[in-house]
Image (tube, rainbow, N blue to C red; front, top):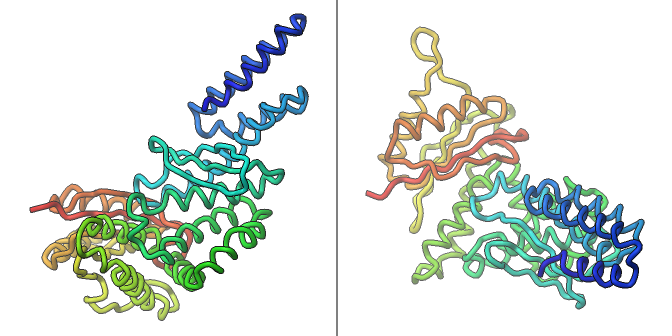
Length: 366
């Protein structure tokens, strides 16, 4: 539904009975329409749009505009937070969110032409609005087309953990609301959710939650969606998170967080549906003559090819990001058997520090 139509209809009705103020109302209407158009065209302008609408609404006491201002405020803040998080998530998961008001208490979310629409009951508290809109958006957006295949505790815990992180980072005043109104009811329904969230936080502390786990689970679920292997999804999900936890353990056992000795078989997982391996980019290697070289990393990638690795995850630390990006570029250029399908940011690097860069290469079909 066009959010401007109720406003323009009300304005036309008002000006018909109050012609002396018609020009003033018309100017306000033009301002609202211009601000709305900019907000729709420039997503970052949504918050500004809500503030302008709220300013006009306070002075005119025009209820449709008050409601539009609240709606724009929710959309602007949630879309802003989600957009930042989208830099870590698999491509295609995050679209724009639109709020649609309903009168019932129950909140329903659905997908409409590639846009997530969150249907909510208007609330006085914008903190409540922010919490519920954020969670319902993520609950719908995560694992597109495969959510019925993902085990419920893993699927729901993923949306809950990311929602909790966004609420904590963006609006501290909403943390208690999230815990009381979203997390506690979900944990009561499924007792497995909280332990899974704890495991997610553990691997997220090294960048492997969004970097590897979400992408790998989505890839496997897509592969088995219409096959008998669909029944293997619970075991595959459990085995992948266990493999990542075991891999991280070697870093946690070393105080400085740098490359420990990791057995060769731990750098990869050859599963029944997909196979993946890790390449961790650290300090540039030195060649003869004292020059930095990427050659050792390219040699490792060729070894992954020989091992039959179909999906290669390349991770770099934040301090060494330029070098990591040059390695990613060189793999894409010099090893055509692997195709660069995604490049993304990380919440933490594999050493446990904030930031980092990641990339996913997929082996081309023979």
